[in-house]
Structure formats: structure tokens, C-alpha cells
Image: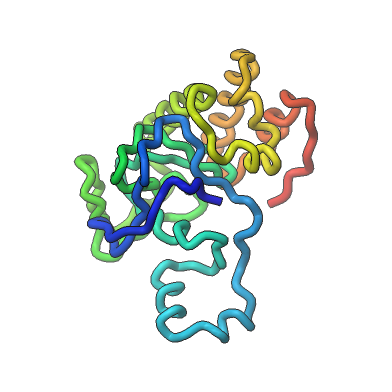
Length: 221
């Protein structure tokens, strides 16, 4: 689920992208996996036109997204949003009205990231290489960690358009929006440790996050 703050427009990075309809401040959670996105069925794929199949192939999309805008989150080596873990994205730098929302694909640590012809994001720190191979450099991990932690500490100070739906799926994140600074810092630390472990999800450390909220959950991968 993506916050209804963005529109699809032409992008200088790649074909199309999603652009802010209004100012979106640092600390805003703009996306989480709501469970409505799912793999295409064989029957659905058989019903797609050649152009639709080509589009899905180009975007390496085996997923039928619940919102078309999720197809156009382009990569930037200096992205304004980052994944905090478990497919939850937060704004790490204010997004101006009309600015493209970008993700850093290198954060997703399950696979190497490859760019045909090299990365062309245009950021001052663009790696320009054809591939980003795991594991990420320590400096890069440190930069991500600082940006994400800073953004999470701003989460209770800005409007959260997805808060209600987010907490239905991730009640363990409730301390991020509360007044108890100690609990909030513990959640932030647990999220950081999970990311440092290089997992696509939050794994065992998510159990610690849950325990802070008095909840339990069986983790499945």
C-alpha cells in the first residue's frame, strides 16, 4: 500500500516514476506490504496482452500490485526514501512538491542489484556501475542506518497517512508514534539490528520489537 500522495509522471531516471503531489516531510511512512499484492495466477497471465506481458517482464514483476504506482518506484543512489525492514518504506529526506520519490534498490539485501548499461540515476554519488554486488560496503550501511534512524525519530512529529492501516499489519511499530521515548528508541535499535543482520525481513529481532508492545508473533520466511 502506498500513501495517496503521489502521481505517475514521466521520469528522467527511467520511463515513468512517482512524483509528490504535495510536500512530504522526512519521517513519513509512505509504503508497507499490506498483503493485497500477490503473485499473478497462470490464468491472469494468460489474459494479459503482449504489451502488458512485456511491461511485467521489463519490471521483473512476478507480483500483481494493488496499486499501479508501486511499479514505478525508481532507484536512486541518493534516494529520498529507504526500507526500514519488512517492506516498510520511510521518507529519509523531505520530498518537495513535484519531486520524484525514489528508493535505493541496494538496501534490499537478498540479491545483487544489476543495471543494464549501468546505473543512470543521475545522483551526485551515482555508482554508475552495471552491478551492485553483496555485501554492501560498511560506509554505505552506515549512511543508510543513520538516515533511517533519524527519519524514524521524526515519525511521531509528522502526519502519517498510512498509520491506521500500517498498525493493523505491524502493531509492533506503535511505539514509533507514541510519547515513550525509551520504547521508541528500543524499537529503532531493534529494527537497526535486524537490518545489520542482512535479512530481507526482520527475523528474530522482530520478536524483540513485538515484545516491547506486549505482543508475540511466529516469524515465517
